Image (cartoon, helix red, strand yellow):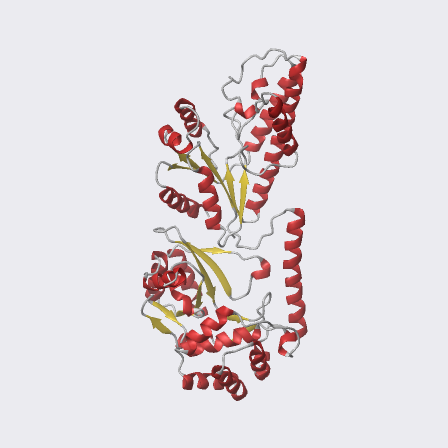
Length: 516
């Protein structure tokens, strides 16, 4: 048995996630008429949170459905306008036991059709709900296989472009997922019942063409013939006239493609996933060396990016991205280090007291001072730019994940002022630069994150994980994480990072879910 077959078999024997089971139970108790209306071939994967749950619900029970979803812990999300359709809502839910996200696609109407438009509405909701069946393995109601097979073929046929329906243009092979579902449903649908459904809903020509499709697996040509056979019936389901539908679809497609192109040229993020209609959040991660901060932030960004739009930002001096302004300064530092002892970066001078008196530098030390001035200015510029990205992302309903966060409380750190050792320098212009930098950081502090997650680790564990630096130095870095404070508008959560990574991630996911 291959790995994929083993995973599929495991999914079919595993019970639904707790949050899915709870949602199903509440729907049954509330008496809501619903069914999982498509892709039941991989329903077991859906109830495990591996793919979407597509539920059709009785539109008359919308108020009850909203209450049930809220009680089950589901939160509504907003798709980008190009992917939003009337009659369809999107929800996310967290399974607290596993930390998995579940995407619920809630349908009040059967909206199908071509990509970028979905310009047809099938008036069969009541019929589909009346003929639903209970799936014993998942405890969830599903569509009768005859109805699901009929809708599956319709979905494939109505997705064809016009040039494909009249025999022009290479349509390519039929989608493999469609063929897999078609074969699975064909083995479960009763031919007589399927023919009766098709005759009543599509008319005799459509039913006969569907019967021909059942005798041989569909291909683009046979699907095009099926679409032409039902053209008269399908015309009634159209949302827009043919010309208007083409115009709208082209506009949406052009908008999507041009946005991707502009994103590559400008470097600006293109929003394609869900936005939070309640407003975005800025989440800052703080942690000493060995706390797993970088690993946790990357894992959380990947976890949320499954469905939500995430903006990852790095505010330190480590392996994160470097602005074009600071890049040449790093090059100068590397070049200097080859010839002599490299100029210590200001953030590496944390051992000096902030108010320590500095002697007047010699002429040979002036280049180092100039380098530090440019370095400090470039860092401020870089952090301001990333804070603007964070503010914009939060305003657009995105999740902003920050590795570190600017602060003006602890001097000499990668996320704090780096010219503080010039606070009482004998040169007035260096003192002025130190004050300017400190004021810049204090202004940056006014943009308060919504959630701060402090990853606390003991010095002994930190030393075992990083294996560099003395135990005393590591203890000071651990203490710094405790000392950094945020205003009352920020919610601060303490996480024990001495735990195994999986437990840390689960705790962090639960905390973030509450903040969304």
